[in-house]
Each structure stands twice: as C-alpha cells, then as structure tokens.
Image 1 (cartoon, rainbow, N blue to C red):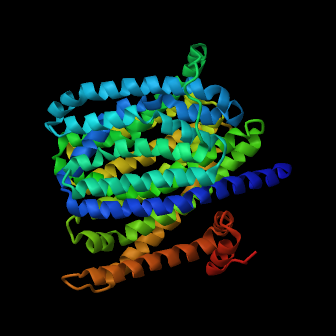
Image 2 (cartoon, one colour):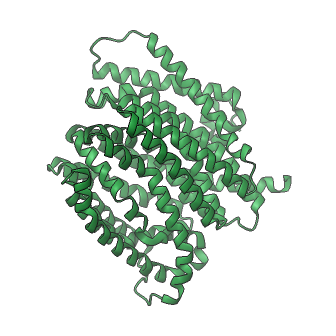
Image 3 (cartoon, rainbow, N blue to C red):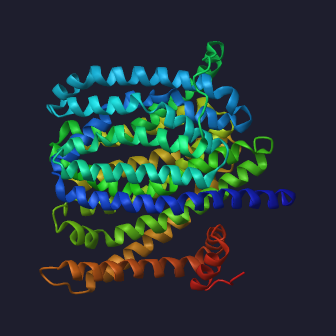
Length: 509
C-alpha cells in the first residue's frame, strides 16, 4: 500500500490540476449562465420556464440515443485507438442523431396534446434541428478529452456555454418567449463544430464507415445508451412527473430553482467526469491505485460541493431580492432544500466514471436504473400529495440522496472499494456544511431587518451572510476535517494554494 501512495497522490494531482483548468474556465461560463438567468428571470414568464421544463422532460428518452454514446466510447477507448475508431463512430453517431431528430418531430404533437401545451410543437422541432447537426461537435469534444487536453477542453466547453446563454438573452429580448430556450440548441451545435475545427484542425470523418466494426462498437455503446437513458430519467424525470400534476407556472418555479442550484453540479461534476474518466482509464492495470484515487476524489468533491451548496442556501433570499425583486420569492425555500441534497449528486459523478473506466457498463446501467426508480417514486409521491415548489424540492432531493447512497454502496462493493471509506467518507463534509448553514441561518434570524428591504440592503446582507458562512465552514473544517481541507487545497496552483492555506491557519508548505 505504501509503495502505491506516491502514485495515487500523483494521479490525484493530475486529476486535480485537470479539474482546476476546467473549473477556471467554467466559472466564467457559469457566471454567464447566472447573468442569463437573471435576465431571463426578468424578461420571461414563469409559464415560459414551465413549458421548457416539459420540453426537456419530453425529449429525455430521445436525447438518450443522441450520438449513440459515441463520446464516452471514444474517450474510454483512449487516444491510441482514437484515429482508428473516429470514422465508424462518427457515422454511427450521425445515424443515431437522424433517428433522434425524427422521433422528436413525430412526438411533438402528441406531447402538446398530453400536456395541453401547444408551444411544445415548435420548441421540439427546433431542438430536433439542433440535434441533427450536432454530430461533428461531439467528435471534436471527444478528441480533446481522449488526449487529456484539459485546457483546450475547458475553453471549448466554456465558450459554448457562454454562446448559449448570450443567444438565449438575445432571443428573449427579441420577444421569442419560451422559444428563447430552444433556438440556442441550433446555435451551440454550429458553434461546437466551428470551435472544434479551430482547436483540433479538420478531422477526416468522411472516410468509409467500416460497417464491420459497428456490431462491436454497438455492443459497447448499447450499455452506454441504457445508462444514458437512466441518467436522463434521473435528471429530467421529476419535471415530467410533477409537471403532469401541477400548473405550468408552479413547475416553472421549481425548474427555475433547480437551474440555479444545478450550476454547482455542472461546475464540479460535469467537468470532473471529463477529467476523471480518461485518467482512471489509464490506471486499469493497477486497480488498487485506481480505487484509492476514487476514494480520495469522493472525499475532496464532497468537501468542495458541501461548501458551495450550503453557501448558496445561506444567501438565497438576498440573491432573489437583489436580482428579481420578489418575483421569484416562491423559489427561495425550493433552492434551499435543493442545496441540502445537491452534494449527494457528486458521489454519482465519481462512481459512474470509475465503473466506466473498468468497463463495467452493464453494472453502471443497472445502478442508474435503480436510482431512476427510487427518484421516480419520490417524484410521484410529491406530485400526488404535495403542491408547493419547496415540497417538490424536498421530496425529489430526498429521493436523490437515498438512490445515490444505495447505488454508491453497491458500486463500491462490486469494485472492491470499501463502501464506508467511499460513501461514509462523503458524510463528514456534508454534516459540517449543514451544521454551519443552520448556525448562520439562526444568527440571521436574530438580526432585525427593515420591513421593505432595498436592493442595497439585500446586497449587504448577501455579502455578510455569505462571508460568515465561508469563514465558519473554513474554521470548523480546519479543526474537524484538517487532512481533507489540506488535500483539497493541494490541487490549487502554488501561489494560490499558499495564500489559501494561510487563510485557514494551515502551514504554508
């Protein structure tokens, strides 16, 4: 074990620095996403958000077959086999995208009738167009990930996100309403193609499709598709279930809240998967090193996500009043309940790439379907017996927590990882985070506030509340999670790391 420790640490630093590259660029992109949500929250109606939430949930099954799991197949196979597989995988992905677009066009009128939302028809048509032309961009993104070119991959992803949000704002200003969410699908498909060509050069994709390789590729891809379908149900299923029982405006509030909170998941988890899958795949010959890296990554991600999520929960009321002036006041408790459970999603973001790196496609698919079933049950209970957005958040969030812990325990056991080291190692950071949140909220309740809060006072309270939580979380972690805090700061660049360590009273070295 001791002989492997330096290697595990080396991998951890490689993954950590790769993630830092992704984070630095993505924070900029997510800043753009937040600005876009501020503007869209002002320009659009709650019903517009609700209609788009329905469109996303309706396309959940169809979006699963988009690309046929091509990107994950190429990344998992690695850079050595990339040039050999890129052409047949491209043609297979293109076929999947054509079928996906045709299905969306076909189900559009049926979905509009089922939910009594005529706006779903043009929205699904435009999303289908974006899907049809997205294949080239997928291949370029897979190439950057397979070659571990984290800096370029970060710029690629961030630029696409920024363009998507800018285009949503432009369409909203032009009066497109709910369609402001749909047309950016076309914009980003074209943008990914152009960016990939600029960063990677021209890929020779028009050679023979080598049909004889398709059965073998599809054998791998089919479990990727089954997994992606389950993951889509996990992520989008609650909108479809809850949306059947509540008005579009209520669903819109729930969706608005979820999009704010999910930025934490997108910044950390999605970027981590792009870094972690190829890194863990390179360690398949040394399962002990690989498994130790999984445990270490879970613990570090639990720490960072708990700090971010509970920090957002602390300042949610002030953020809403500052930017939307009570228009989305109903979303505040929904945001806070989502923040309580969002760190559990990070556990899934490590277990899934770990399983895929070991080619456990079938097991990963089954675990995701277990999660989907549990979350669907909690969502159905919410739709049947609850009526407020915050109640849906609490119910669905609890479903996520239960399902991910169950899947995490099973996945760890199958990979010969101590489930307590992995899943149990996740809990200390979460407990510290929720304790600090409750303390800060209690202190805030003791502070007198004016009857009519201004945006200036909201901004001041936001800074004070957020700063108080950050300070308390750092200090409590300093004494209760010292080693984990030190490890988490260890992936930062040298100069930033030294400043951060001094700030939390750790030695600078």
